[in-house]
Amino acid sequence: MSKVTVVGAGNVGATCANVLAVNEVANEVCLIDIKEGFAEGKAMDIMQTAQLMGFDTVVEGVTNDYSKTAGSDVVIITSGLPRKPGMTREELIGVNAGIVKSVCDQVLKYSPNAILVVVSNPMDTMAYLTLHALKLPRNRVIGMGGALDSARLKYFLSQALKCNANDVVTVTQR
Image 1 (cartoon, rainbow, N blue to C red):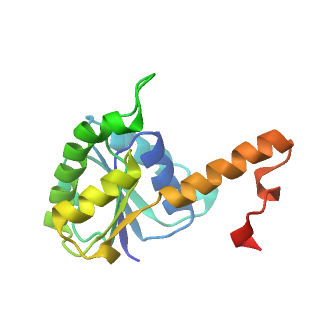
Image 2 (image 1 turned 30 degrees about the vertical axis):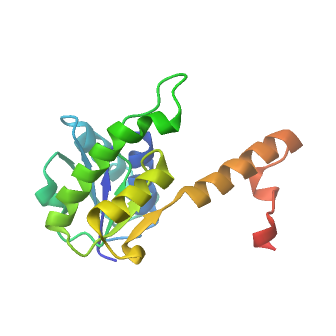
């Protein structure tokens, strides 16, 4: 795979870009955010570890310039408002649906064949709305909540059992 774009340079997006780079999943990772200079700073932090971590992936950060995402094979969407204290995931639907739709319109303008991985909350709803609003084939819109929910369950079980989460084995892993 040659290029992955991560939309949203917050904690989830920056961590995602870092994991993609360190594992050399793509030759290039584009990290984009609406906050001026934010994605650029995160990308620089990641790139400054390249010689320490031994990866060759190039990570570029950009502010709101979707033309830099052109040619992406995969676009990971982490953008959207975070929950405020006491707020449910469902209360995010109205606001985040508009954000995710706008982001998708922009990335598909420059990468019309990209596969979209939706992480924005509420993830299941955002993935469904993305699929139907953009009328893309089902194999081009992926929600990653199942993996995250499984990881969270294993973490909480490990805390209750006072063991490492890697020692918790689910039925599907046997």
